[in-house]
Image (cartoon, rainbow, N blue to C red; front, side, top):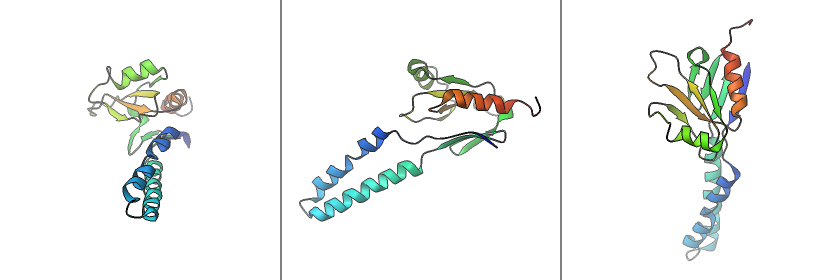
Length: 151
C-alpha cells in the first residue's frame, strides 16, 4: 500500500525560462530559413519539456520502503525524519549544515527538504536529504510506516 507519493516536477518558471531556446533557434536559423528556424525551435523546446517531465524523480513510501528517485531503503533502517519548510532552515540543511556523505535528491525549484537519518551501521551515509513540496506529509508517512504492524 502506498502511503505517500510525490513527483518532483519542475516549477512553471522552469518551463518559461527554457523557452529562451525558441527565439535563440529563430535568431540562429532565420537567416538560412525561417521555416527551419521555427521547426527547430518547436522541436528543441518540445524535447526540453519532454526531458524535464520524463526525468522528474518520484518520492514514495510504500510497503515499508522509502524510494527517492532511483534509490530505496527499507524504513527499518531509517530514524525519525525532520522536515524543514522555513526557507532559512531548508537553505541551512542544503548548505552550511550539509554533511558531504549525505545522499541527496534535491531540486532547486523546491525549497522545503526532509532529512531522514540512516540507522544501518553498515551504511556509510549518515542521512538522506530530499526535496519535497509536502514535508509534513512525507515525515508523517515515514514515521507512520516505521511503526510495527498492529501497534
